[in-house]
Image 1 (cartoon, rainbow over the protein chains, first blue to last red):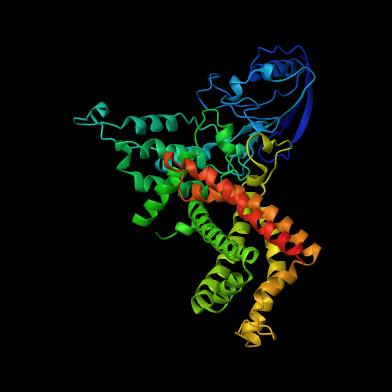
Image 2: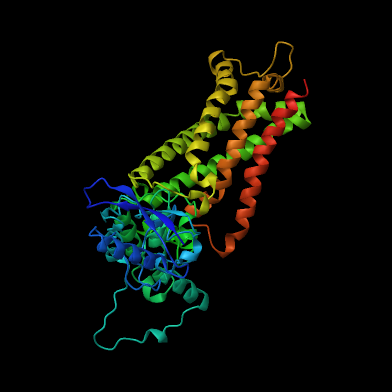
Length: 248
Length: 224
């Protein structure tokens, strides 16, 4: 396949940035999207040009490191996959592909397609954990009975890899699907209930301080989420937050 | 409890509560207006009751006006905050791939409804308030001794331009409700295995109520 790539190039956080056109030929339909970018970068390096900076790590759809807004969608046009799992067979010979960084005030661009998603880390630090005393005689978690339905829902929420596609897809740059998933995975389990009140209050407070927008329930996040995290997690977070506010 | 309405979830909760209130009001407004199609007498009686009963006039009406103003102001506040959350837009954005037009354009359908409300207030509410509270006529009667409510409604829908404006506004109201109804339930946390049926009910409400108002306007226009 021969393709035209329109890639966002930005030297640093202060640079204005712009789309730059690149022609790339002999792209195999079996390549992953990131492999296609690897080929482009090899070519750029051979020409003595600056390669395109983009995030990646496991390339197995697990780590949540890759991002990219491809042809107007987070992680591209395929469903239930991250950019590293997106294959070039999703495109046609002669296509023009727009490649932009995830856009949000809370996700500032560092360089080219790389954005700073440490705001998610700070939300996690605010309450996305359970406190367990690991000294003495800890009780095995398997000894605590958990309803199968709750266990399944907690597991599904816990599959969130924190990639930020929800924020990137949302017209309001809302992080509520991410925070909803992180709140839900603990709220549904007995170990998480102990700190449930302070967890949801602190995580939502941190989310607001980071400058994410308000959820208007468009559902774009759920559609674009590579892990299929459900909007029900946002509703659960809303319930948890309202109940916690009444208590606190 | 302190600070709840300064949080993103609290603001959405408040927005949803005002939406519930307005949706209940809309249903009540429709229930009275549809009487005009079936019985002039019943419509006049209901209108006179609503227009003179002190609980409606001095408690419900101020609460309604507050609810409408709150809903619009909060809508603008949320829109401004949300725009600030992405100061640099995408060059290419395919919003239609993952969300409905209605959900992405609530501010525009809302502004159209606001423009309609201005027309509606000029048409009905301001003359009503003027007659009752400035001219002091609480009788609701015409010089011939009959109630004036049905006559006023019937007369207003004679003008085809007004009917067209009303019909257009109700199309936008329907679009607003098609997203807003279920969005309000989601905002208060009512989205789980027990609330699946709400989605269908919300769609039916969002289509049937505005359609009913359009029918009333057209009925009076074509029955002159």
